[in-house]
Amino acid sequence: MAYNSYRAYGLRIDAEIACPELQPDPHPDGEPDVTVRLLPAVESVSETVANGFYEVQPEVFRMTVPGVGQYLVEQGSRISIEPLANAHIDEVRLFLLGSSMGALLYQRGLFPLHGSAIETRWGAMIFVGTQGAGKSTLAAQFHHRGYRLLSDDICAVACTPEGLRALPAVAQFRLCSDAYERIGAPQQARFDVDKFVVPMGDGYCTQPVELKAIHILCNHEQREPQFTLLRGFDRVQQLLENLYRPHYLKGQNTQSDLMRMAGLIAQKCIMVSVTRNRDASAIDAMIGFLEGAWTKEFGLVPELEKR
Image 1 (cartoon, rainbow, N blue to C red):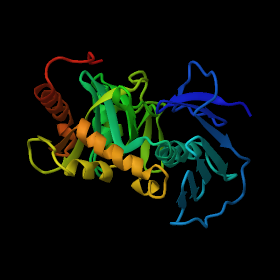
Image 2: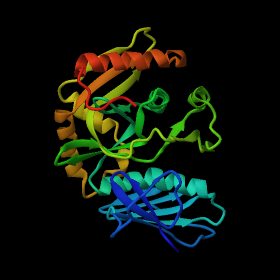
Image 3: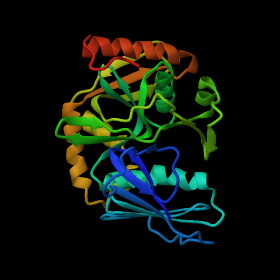
Image 4: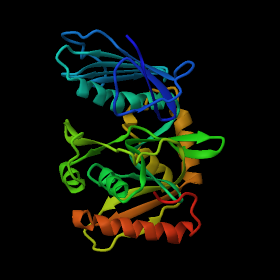
């Protein structure tokens, strides 16, 4: 089977499965960083793995998804998919680009946060928080206002010689029904499991961006939002609490390296708590509030012009 070459998380990914959510690699030369193999479909797969439906060992991650198939992630460079004969291809890709990719990022020593990231004139801004905090909704509204998106759902941070970078990921949003209705109903959107999947379109940033700040979103009934700088050990704790599926890290060879990376991010990156009213009617005001807070806290000289 021929391979399709893509770019995501700073990696060249050659896949036997077509992934329209990923950006094609314009220069697919040399060996890929990651290979995705699609094995022949089967009638049933084993569900006898540890911890329910997944198992973590050094450089090996196995996951069984009822009704979809089985995934094997190895050494940060290979993903093998054994789909069920009746599995829908959209669901097969959903768990490839979600859980399987998250495990692979852990194996490669990248720091995957569960959140959304945008490119701004000051650098990359990441939004994290508990389920329902409005991470994707806020990022989608920034996108609607002309900002370019880096990622939604999994935000990978890399430590490079140039400093911390937020990496471009999968060019799509995963939105709950109210957020989906707010931005309209693109024909390309589809419904997966519990959310609408919406392509980001042209407003997608394809290059790594210097990480400026991580925002922990907290919902509250108060009328006015608050922007509070975080200090001390709480910064590291917040990073660990907002990892993408942190239970996938336990047992990986890179666990100690990622703990050290959490300390580095806490030291080098600005971290803030954003307390706000979750009312959907306040989302536009929230955009203006954050733009004003960034200007006040980070200065008036932009690194990039806002799209």
